[in-house]
Image (cartoon, rainbow, N blue to C red; front, side, top):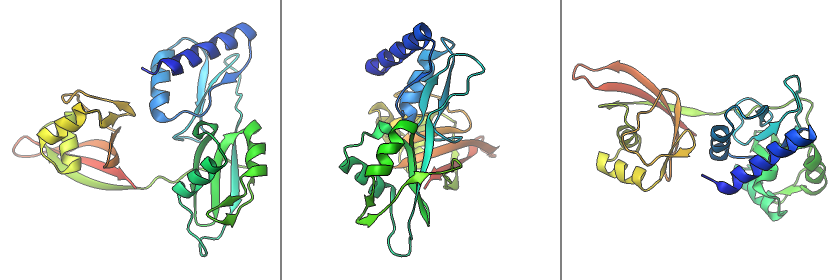
Length: 241
């Protein structure tokens, strides 16, 4: 468990209760969010917000009361023409790092055919607008969006026949490798289930769990489609692309 993260969370809970004010974390990735959720349980009032449903990077916001709907997450957009240059996620990240902007100061960001979308906080948006003015040698100008845009997640579906929904079976099917190699990958902590590292080869996977395999990508285990005549199972898996 990330002790520094838990210590920061406990300090924010203390501030929230003692001073009766809204406080929040920086943007956290899904692994950090999973740790925080397990730690918080029912300790306090909080919500998780990344600007839109299913955002990958989100803030944990500790609220003053049940009716409170506070959030300081804002959506910024910059127009650009993909006909002249194709901006990738890596290009945006590189430009952010060149400005010494920490990854946890911003939420999700991506490029479409005609615009760049970036989530950050209300306070930090001023810095972004004033200083984040170029990506891959093209000039960009960010402004606040009136609506929170949603990233379109694309997947490719495929089917596999496996003997059970044990993690080693599923990893073997995804990577098209032997079960022993899959077991070795799991024991080497190269596999995450729902953003948490899992070292148990025998873990049973539920429907719609996210499986991340280092070097192979991220997958959604949709679950069993049917049982075959040889008592094996046909499962559906989706790869994020």
